[in-house]
Length: 481
Image (cartoon, rainbow, N blue to C red; front, top):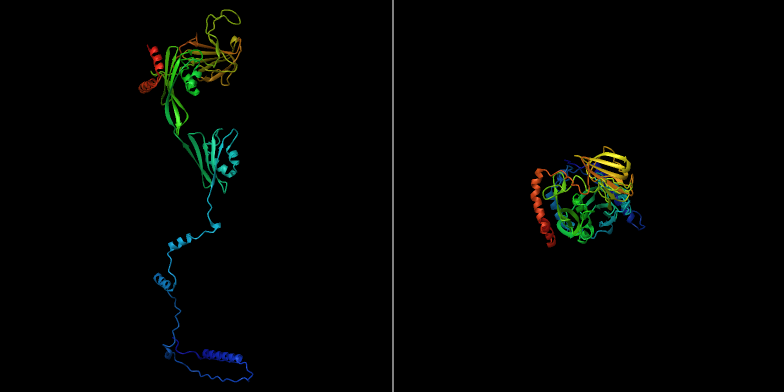
């Protein structure tokens, strides 16, 4: 501890103060009196610091001071603050109420919705480019469809719905509406798009219709409110047993039980034919749709396949120009020459179909037959098609063909007086009348399936007959008796 004040520093301080006082006095005297001399005397004395204890405050120590605790700091703030403290949450609330400068306000994002119908020649890029969608966004959405390629396969009549952000013109969402039951949505996520397939299930309603033929199958069927598609399908189902060009008679009747599809109360399409009956020339035919693990087909109530191994007529014709006649007089040579087939008059170029599954035994020219195709169907069955204009590309010797496949085209080659198809049906080399020959059934239903089918067929038959009108029931009763 310091006990004595050093003399030299003290003396210098007193001298400085004395000079300062003298200068002030000289500057403040405005009179013209001669300057006076002021004598200053100093008496220096050594002072013992112990005598001054208690009268001079101690100099603070230079030691490091500790920080105040939270409690102390809070106390100091409370004592010195002139206004009450506002809680943080309340302060934020007050700040939130203050108006935000217009340039800092967040703008609401808006979108424009567009719809385009796909026309022939349209593509994704041409449609979106019309709405100023960037090539980058078009590429990104196409990448989301890279696997299924639905956007590449879109067809005329389908629609594209999309949303575009107004401020950036960025594509936010794209929807390909394939039909009323199926659509694919592409939704933006950052810089990519994700695809989602959305399907709806329609309500299936069973519908019954019946009709009596006075003019033709299609004219009277349409008058009864039966869709043309159903009439064609029904003709195909019974086509192995009934020749709809030759066998239909006035007064024939038919009934049909089929499915209609509804969505949100609106009819949107047709389903399958569940069952059908046809009364033709005093004979009754009935078909029931049934699904097996391997296929779906139509069967009689007893389980026999409606599909036969052969179709009755292999060409769409206008009339039979020459019937099967072993004693026919040839139109060119005027001699008795058997006509071992049937001639179906049809325009040149009309497709000729294979009557059944088999292998092409011959494809070429044969004398008066002109261009000829012969198909071996196995089990002794063969068919011949003559006077052809040309062959289908795949028709050649040894080629396998399926029933109904186009093998050639109607012509007038060989000894023919006009364009027509000459068709022959042979069993073990013997010619049979194609119009009347009994066609073999297709492969029978397996016995395991038959046990499940028979009870089902009884229920469907009972359901179909429960819808019959009184006139229809009378016709059935007259046939069964």
